[in-house]
Image 1 (cartoon, rainbow, N blue to C red):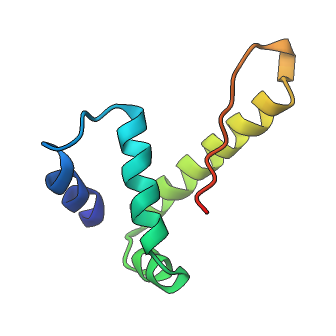
Image 2 (image 1 turned 45 degrees about the horizontal axis):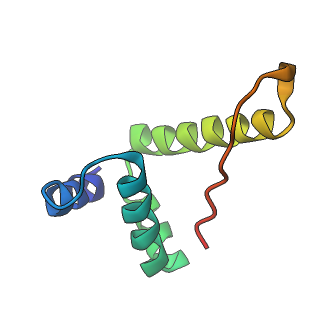
Image 3 (image 1 turned 135 degrees about the horizontal axis):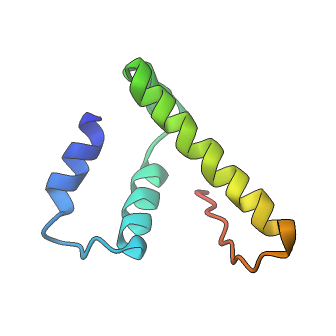
Length: 84
């Protein structure tokens, strides 16, 4: 996705690339976006990008639900990521 490439180029030499930096960058970006901005980005996605986006959303959401319910008595720590 062009947006990811642009953000990477802007910040690759300014951030360490660890999960905390990436979360911070993503949340800062999203806080500046309106619903309409986000829908415009989605409209510009090709089929594979849209599938990737939905796949990540589904995977992370399901991981969170299973971790929250302590499914199978696993010891998993889940940190919800609330954008707003």
